[in-house]
Length: 500
Ligand SMILES: C[S@@+](CC[C@H](N)C(=O)[O-])C[C@H]1O[C@@H](n2cnc3c(N)ncnc32)[C@H](O)[C@@H]1O
Image (cartoon, rainbow, N blue to C red; front, side):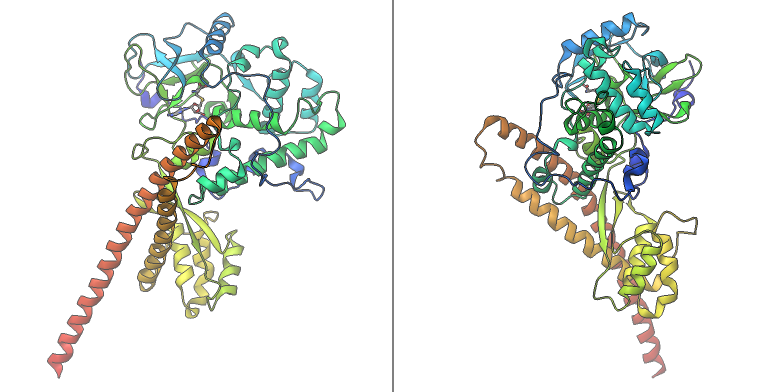
């Protein structure tokens, strides 16, 4: 058996393209090409208590913890070419349903072997071929194409080849797409994830409206609004965000992999799904042994707790995620004497006067430090603004690691101030959360609110922890700088007295 490290191919459940670059609007990847045209319908996330449009019930899928539908899926897959498995679907403690080991599984074993014929991708055959042809003719990119495909197949019910798979999908995936605007404002006020969730919802709305304008309205026979509407698109995007896999060995192709998508995530494992050329199937290689009855995990990628909440609707236990990070917002002061010049430099590199940077337990990025240098630099350093802005952006090939020792103290103090302002926001929310939601009377609403609030509290605790750590490092660095300066001053005074 090959060593795990040689056979593990990196992939993530939900494309890693979103996590790799915080500053890249993810919409660029899945929106259709004409989205920026002047004729596009502009629409923003609802400010009312409902997400997008009125919440309708999706007529397919199942309750998120339904094992019956998952067992029917298992049977259908076995009859359709899925080889015998060393795992079975069960109700689990972490993640509602998951795959558990049937017998002892060794570290370094290859599992799954889902054949390409059981994978849903942009090349899959449509039960309604005409609809597929129209989308292809309009060069619809993979994400919206797959979202439409899923709805189209779901609406075919048992005539679709994928009916058993679709019946086992959650009717309402856990995703921030299902949080209303007021829930996002209420619970995620302190976290930058709120902005990302609003952006994402707006992108989904924009994508749907664009498809409707360009394609669906012109082919109402193929894409009737009763089936292809905002509600069904919210569902299909929720499914894609929480289950789509990027397969590096298939040139980064994105796909839904039935059965494999029953695996839950653990921050403690580093095994990813990918296509294995030798066995011609989707596999993963275990990074640790499992005992019979134990849940088997994969990794959805190196994502922060906020990113996991955004796409998958869960937050790992505090302190268990080594890839966790918090976003810190830094802002240029309007009262800055060189505000105009600094803004020009920032805009030249695609940055703005208020910019978010990831902060990790281990520290902060060179981009963040460069941005802080720019904010605190005096007018005499005007000729350095461009260089600083270039280093603050991660879009240039220029040398990023710039140093201005004379500005260190001010730049670090500026980051510390921003950090402390952010900590105060988290603390305010966490304090207030205890007495929140006592105004709710219906048990169903109370349950939902308690559930969302708990997720938000977990997220805020984990993000505040990272900020506390940064605060500690910053204070220590500043103390060192200041005590170093004090020592130098004392030595200087000593010499002066000697000469006197
Ligand atoms: C790819 S699916 C995994 C199968 C899923 N549990 C099911 O029953 O359909 C991803 C979803 O599983 C759940 N999940 C995965 N890992 C989890 C974890 N570590 N903790 C809590 N929920 C998890 C989340 O609801 C997520 O949106």
